[in-house]
Image (tube, rainbow, N blue to C red; front, side, top):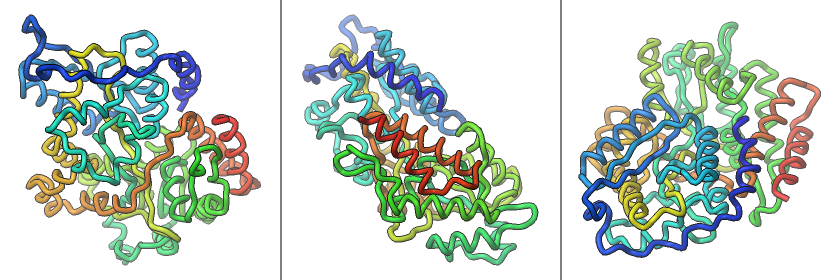
Amino acid sequence: MKKKRLLPLILTAMISLTACSGNQEANTTAAEGGTKDGEKIELTYWYAWGDKIGENNENLVKQFNESQDKIQVTAEFQGTYDELHAKTQAAVAAKNPPEVTMNEISFIETFAKAGMTQDLTSFVEADPEINMDDFNPGLMGNSYVDGKLYGLPYLRSTPIMYVNKTIFEEAGIDLKSIVTWEDFTNAAKQLTTKDRVGISMPVDIWFFEAFLAQAGGQVINKKGTEFTFNKAAGVEALSLWKNMFEEGTLRIPGGEPKAAADQARQDFVNGKSAMYFSSTADLSFMLQLAEENSFELDTAMMPKHKEQKVPTGGANLVMSAGLDEEKQQAAWEFIKFMTAPEQAAYASEYTGYLPSRISAQETETIQNLYKEKPQFKVAVDQLQYGNARPMVSGYPEVVKIVIEEIQKMILDPSIEPKAALDAAAERANAVIK
């Protein structure tokens, strides 16, 4: 989270830049023609996250390079989303950005309005091969800024509930019975023992966005001018967390967000918690960990309350602004390849991320996957309840503020949920004003 402190300073420097005026359609695409002297067009692609996600990125880039002989892409790992974004902003300021990069969806508007990313609308309009109707509509809410397309859905996700099926069976609990908040809290009580809690969960804005929406609330008003997460719905959501924490059915690891998330996962893998919230993107890795630790893993949708809602997450692929026409065309060909149905199916099977294309869900690869490992289908079924994430400028800083105030509440029992959220909202509204 410390990396996010770079955002306001770098964006101030970048705000004077303007996005490239748009694509002028070339006589031949980069993939067809290459450079005039026959040399390959060199592109750099920056991505976030390692393990299975990193392997997937490297594998797909290799497939692209082998699929044609006009463009050569070099994939480079840049750490977490926060680290990737900070490095990208610095590279843009130094006038040496990667041609293509992943952009976590809540950053799409920030990067676009700072002139760091290219409007892709004209590329889509000029390319008969791309079918925008094939992208899952539940994933498109964070792709447009002021009616213009700035990113194509790539590795996209929703949070889901992971459960230790072995523990559930020993406790006599049917996972299908957990539908509502009440079901969830009752199960957490049943699953809690002297050596184990019902669920281990870090303070994560994504999970708060989920519970807030389920209680009927919104993070920010429709005009994007005032944060509203401190209204009744937000208080109800945070009160649920506080009550479960105080009764001992919920463990909330402390510390820096990534370390807290790692600890929550370790609790789950070690059998110290029976449930765990995380991204569907972790599914392949979690199945591997479950096998290594000799328990059976299952998945379920997030529990519902007044509404059944879940935020979408993950990243879109974006093109850096200011590229020459030749590199624009090459970057577009690469983005198009990485988000094509076949590659979307491959990435989903390899990692657990959602297949971003409707046609990808219908491929033999995905259909066989759902038969063999039904845990993968949960996130796709849940996507019908998906919400776009807030993209208002300054939201990355607001995320840090909300996490800080909730963590204060956890550490100090005298702080009530309403007071914690009011403090967060006051600070957050100052950021966007």
